[in-house]
Amino acid sequence: MNDPVRASAAAMWTDDLASSALGDAAIPFVRLALTGDALAAEAAERMQVGRSGIYDVRISTAQGELVAEFRGQTRTIRGRAEG
Image 1 (cartoon, helix red, strand yellow):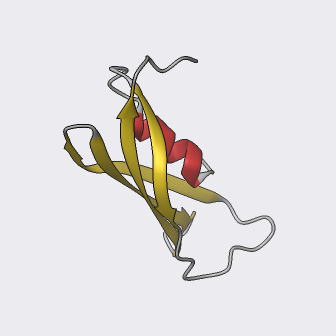
Image 2 (tube, rainbow, N blue to C red):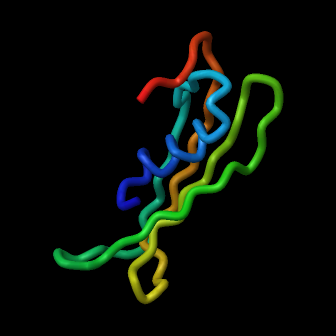
């Protein structure tokens, strides 16, 4: 995935138990990505307690150089994820 929000969403909805809403997010950029750079995003669930969760997404170049890190906090809401 090339988009930190989509990568985070994929990590949040893997269990398909309920829908989640992104409550807070931070994206510190540590390096410029240039036009034509191939980027990769790797998402991971850091914690899930009750209805709250924290998800991290690491965005890096094809050479493994860190571009940005995304951290999102979620809250489970009623309903099921669709799509």
